[in-house]
Length: 469
Image (cartoon, rainbow, N blue to C red; front, side, top):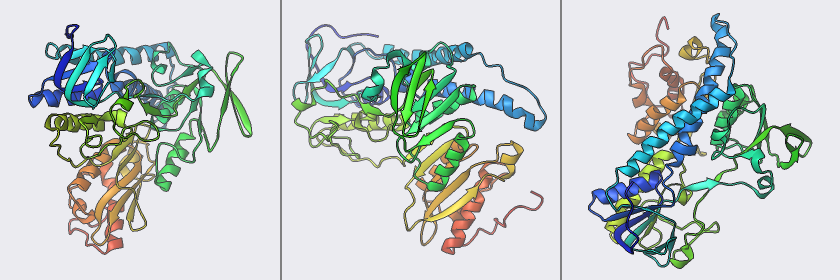
């Protein structure tokens, strides 16, 4: 990776942070002819590759493999998994490092002088100072500094007995027991993965919902499924203390000891030390800049914010898209252009996966339910569980959103997302040829229910369950 010489710097667009959003912002700005600087203190790689999407899915997939071995007996195939915790974690790290290396190669491919290693701090609306004293003068600046785990004060004193997503993948082997504090998406994914690998797991969530699932029916099904392999406590505040060779969690009515704790209580934008008070832009109560979600511009300033740094949509595809929007508008400043944002879309990679997309249901929504507890292909796979709830509007059954849990929902959700984006109705989606037997055809009862509710016609091709199915 090429670095700039130790001299004051000027550019059209300065991007602070070399994660997914920052890389996208720098790339699009440079492609539009801007002179760019990409500033980062260590160029370690993206959150996704190092401590997020990829290592977590490696662990999740290991857990699914162990679960599949146990589950094979339903097919008359008898086996007991012998789990080598050290080898599980070694593969997680090895494959993670492969993804990280690919990300770091992209730094090496940057043109000479673009990458600037150092910590940046604002001294004005479009001026920065680096840790080594160099100054940066830019026409516009993109803040893409990412986020960091929130570790509440009582847990910090436990030192090496706690993990976050930034440390847990570097553990040499699996613990015997694990307490997970926080029931967000990543906490649930890792909790279930460890449980599937033979670790005794308990999840503690202070709220009454887990995984950010707003749909009550889907939430109930998620909770039921998770509780088949671990303990889940809702509505509890826990107090940690160091115990004999482990950690003790205490709450109203109980206490339990664990070898380790995973603290998964959310992530906060990494904005400390940026000197935002020197910019004059408005900040919220948490110190996050106020910004326009369609332009990512902070007020009328030449400052833009993208990715986890804006605390809005903390998922990778949104970070990439936001970086692109922010980088392009930074080049255009002051003539920024609003952009229609992507359909809200999240997937939690539990087993089975949870997906939520589009607008949540409201009092006027029509809801079509498609249960998967007796769906044909799901039964063939011995994976018959889950529920799809499809939301539509009156009077014509226009599809507006969905919440779902069940086998293959990480793929099926993409079909519904495309249908919503294209303005499909329940009737028009039923016009699709649904191959038999597939998981996709399990959507049809929910789509038919919407048609019935809004008195929309069923397509002539759709005559219910095919004869002989």
